[in-house]
Image 1 (tube, rainbow, N blue to C red):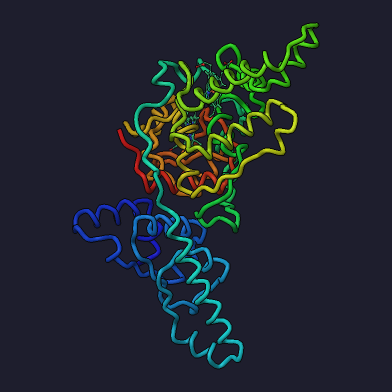
Image 2 (cartoon, rainbow, N blue to C red; image 1 turned 90 degrees about the vertical axis):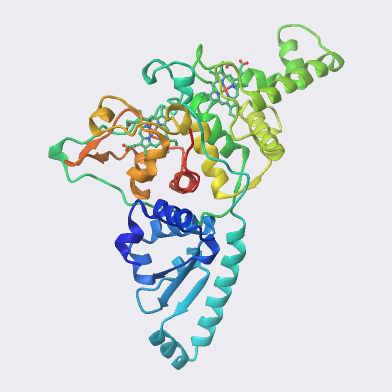
Length: 394
Ligand code: HEC
Ligand code: HEC
């Protein structure tokens, strides 16, 4: 396969279509790629390979060792078969340390296989209209999704070209595999877009989360009442705290009238983790020592971000706006983003606000989408991976 084919934005959808058209089982398909093709844009290659793996397709690297080999990347490329090039074999067998190298390659290969299996979970595609459309609100008359309040620089004027387009910087930990999250991460993915980093929200439209969370602490309630000269016993305070606790849990499962119900549904571990962080955010004494880590696959991370943050403004499917319509304020559907933009364009647009080049004149469009400086490039790459593997549905 050529580099052009592999790097094309339609590559993954093409593979998916070919599998459907031929009725072939994904595991019967093995794609052979050369190291040179992969190394041309190694960061994007990692994501594409992970997407292929998650589809169940087998991947082989042909002629390994003949091009510009990088063990750092080899470790991150989820491949099933590594075909070592002839010249490389001759080289390493002549070298006394060669056998160690072969050993290392085999162990890398083994550990990859084990890690890859972890991917598929109860992840489902994002569906339906955006939350703003659901509420009949236009982008300009709501603060939902804007509470990061960090707007990047405006689109550069033609005189300022060439554009600053920071190259994609995924950390070398980015393998698209499971990561350990804390409640603070779940809060960033699922709540921060509306309630802000401090939890204060944007009253009167978006209430603060602090008071309802403080109400879950009997101790805090007693102290607060003491300050206003009232003595409350813990026998009186505990049932109130329990009631507040139940209300907060209910909110985490069902949402509110103007607040979406958490999507995807939170697992018990996620609820406990988020809850523990909310208590820390509200300043409940000792809460910081009770944080609960959860291990989540990359696709689940992507699912959280897309469904809880991006879906506030972006519908899942719909008309793919022209550059003109985009400039007039239309918001493209999530289904169009991965075919319209490369991984690099997607990640830099979301994390730094780099303008997207639109239309045949490649006009830089930087609309009014907030810049999500609180999401890392790795996390946004997870969102891209998720959107490519689970195409949004109506
Ligand atoms: C799309 C925006 C949005 C997102 C995302 C969101 N909320 Fe809300 N939240 C609201 C709005 C609007 C209200 C007030 C109206 C209502 O209750 O529906 C609210 C109210 C609340 C309240 C009740 C406050 C009170 O005074 O009773 C709590 C608690 C809360 N949110 C917690 C959360 C948590 C935790 C998350 C993340 C899992 C979250 N919210 C995500 C918009 C959002
Ligand atoms: C507060 C509303 C809002 C939220 C939340 C939001 N977006 Fe956007 N997004 C927009 C608007 C408006 C545009 C079109 C104008 C522009 O480019 O800023 C846009 C455009 C984009 C584009 C450029 C598409 C193109 O072809 O030009 C990408 C990529 C994108 N959003 C990704 C995301 C991702 C990923 C998330 C979730 C982390 C997200 N957006 C959350 C409002 C939002």
